[in-house]
Amino acid sequence: MSTFKAPKGTYDLIPPQSATYLAVREAIAAPLRKSGYGYIETPGFENIELFARGVGESTDIVTKEMYAFETKGGDQLALRPEGTASVLRAALEANLHKGGNLPVKLWYSGSYYRYERPQKGRYRHFSQVGAEAIGAEDPALDAELIILAVDAYKSLGLRNFRLLLNSLGDAECRPAYRGALQDFLRGLDLDEDTRRRVDINPLRVLDDKREAVQRQLTGAPVLRDHLCEACKAYHEQVRELLTAAGVAFEDDEKLVRGLDYYTRTTFEFVHDGLGSQSAVGGGGRYDGLSEMIGGPALPSVGWALGVDRTVLALEAEGITLDTPAATAVYAVPLGEEARRVLFGTVTELRRAGVATDFAYGGKGLKNAMKSANRSGARLAIVAGERDLAEGIVQLKDLVSGEQRAVARDAVVEEVRRALG
Image: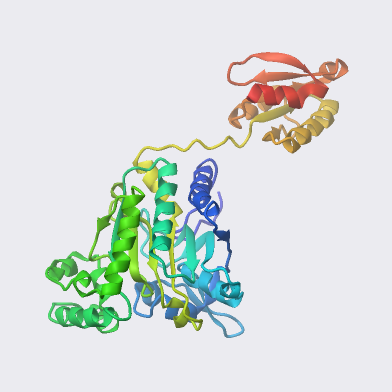
């Protein structure tokens, strides 16, 4: 027994469950690949100021949840708590926005880190697939990303998820709403930390999940009533495009999400089978983020979908993904000559695209066949000295138990035929 364990709030992905995680990542990425999004990968840590500016100094992510550290060289770094700021930083650094083909459409997959109280569905290390469309202000782009997420969830067989939708306005109309909201919130019975948040970013108070706070928010000013005409028209176009695409949504006037950079379109996917950690993904438009981190004006929109939460949603609906077996064929040699010959056959099958494994370690027939059955393989190839002398191997169906002789030079063809 190892004396070491995974750190608190983290998990290991091991077979066979890891195959489900891989399938979820692929299902989320598949619609993006077909829609002009290219893959991007960024470092697991960044300059801490990138997140302080981009995510927001008043957010729980920055004030309480970031894993921050100082390097031996004195650099102030943080493990990435989210993906958007890193992706935008990388796009700006590589001057992707100067290529003359906006928006720049990128997708990514990776691990993210937040120091949170561990519970089911909330981990300190978690996995997301995300997408960003950088450099264009267009309601169709917002709708496209939402539709791609919906299509990804549906391709996995999920049905009991809901889309929440809101508009957070922009630099023209939000200041007036901010002032009205601050006036309302300052009249409530709030703790010192929340009162400080009222001064820095009052919209974040709407996102407070504590019942004592939510109870007092009845009658709070609604952003919808303060939207300028341009934001109203923009949001209505997004709603119309989603409706035309057959995407159902619920208007949620309190939806602000946990990041300061969102403007206009904001959305969240929730699943009612997950309890308190019901959000499985979300995103929105962040038209001012580029300027916040020192870049030019680049209106953008994106989302991140939680792989961990999506797997929990599948479990809640009783959905088991049809993942391919790690091994389709298992080779069992009997004797040294058979070991040499069958190892060559294994290599040949793998190069032909057949998932094949081998009885390593000089196991006897009984133990080797047990390993073949445990591997999940459909077929076993068994050969001893007599078989080799006759130029054949035995091909055994591990499901039906049927066994037949196959010419050595026809193994690949026969295996393919047997596997269908």
